[in-house]
Image (cartoon, rainbow, N blue to C red; front, side):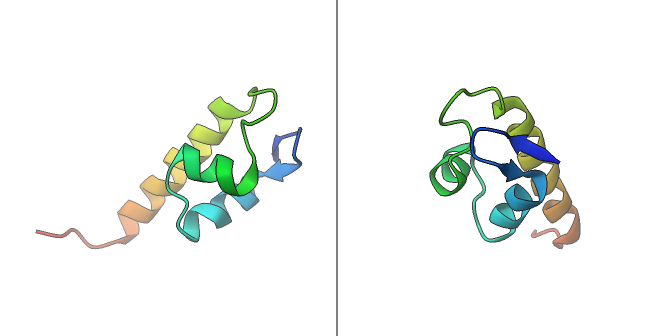
Length: 64
């Protein structure tokens, strides 16, 4: 699904960037340009970011 129409960025592209280490909105904006033009995608990008980070956290073992 396209999340950022201004730059043609999909949710899959965002998830791949997160998997490669972009763990903040600022990093995603720098790498993919999401939210840098009209800004309408920011809410959806943040949801994709948070959901992916939660998935990553569930897979990783807890550190004591």
